[in-house]
Length: 439
Image (cartoon, rainbow, N blue to C red; front, side):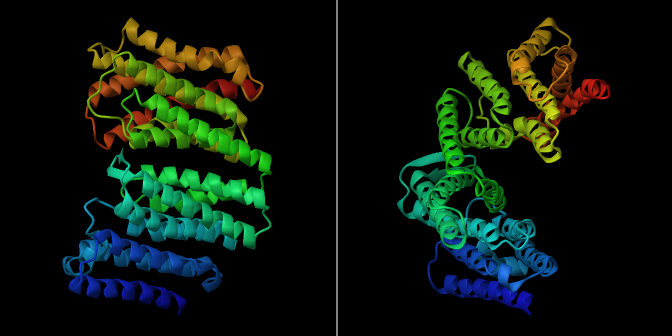
């Protein structure tokens, strides 16, 4: 019965908006946000409407099927499509919304605060930020899908802050100072996530990211939360200032700040050193004349950090801190790729040359010179560093070979070419770990 009620509300709102659009001038963004807010407010009731997971899954499958039918069926698209799809950008946000809500419901496991705070942020923050930016946005900045406004982002931050602070203060045992700091951290980070998301993926990034941040932060003391605020602001300022002389877009710089914060928050300061070295080396390459016509976007940053983040996540989930070695190897492979790519731009991209060997040695040196100081577990340093030199050289050789065989740029192949080579080669680092830890 509750499933039918939720679907009836969604269908009724869309039919009502279709009726209003047929008789009055309604901005496409406004109609999308009305549906967005209505869905969000209904979803907020899920912890009280449903006490099991399967009704939510059935509801989500039905909602996604209905929304995709509107997108693909010619008759329904002509009738209801303008309610959701009349904005000029390509977006699948209406589909990602129920998927994100379902994942959140499963993760929250009946905890109303963990479920409702992320949904509030997504529902109210996204809508208010978009409408404020549309009406009052003057200070605009470029993203990978066009432009957004500082006014809209500030409105999003304020709503996200209040959507976190007020529920935590009134309905949980979190203290006043802690709820203020948690609200600031969540508000700032999800504001950055909303600014860098593309094709409606903020409807996934925001609820899931808010959930994990809230789950970790609500048990921390005020001193640790204050340190997180300082670190978050410092990393954002560093990446934005440094990226001004690179080919990184504004969105890419912000995504680098988010990923840097996540590396630090999950792993600790030792894990942040390698990404900072790679980012600084990238900025230095650009300053010295590495000339690329198109700016590197958010997806380029994610491709570079996808492999290392996998090893960091595994280290945290399995409590195997020795995977720090594979994390370093993946970062060394990505840095070697950046160095060798510069040679390819200047026309020197033969694989088996001394110049490419020099790139591998430079990447190995930058990443593993501080390794004895950074190692988070007791290790056999000579064995690991010796293997690291060979693996880094293999990584740059594989990168160069794949680039020669698969030269296409701007395609999905880049995800495999640039995102997969470094972590796959880094897995060879399991050999020295197995040799050492089997003793």
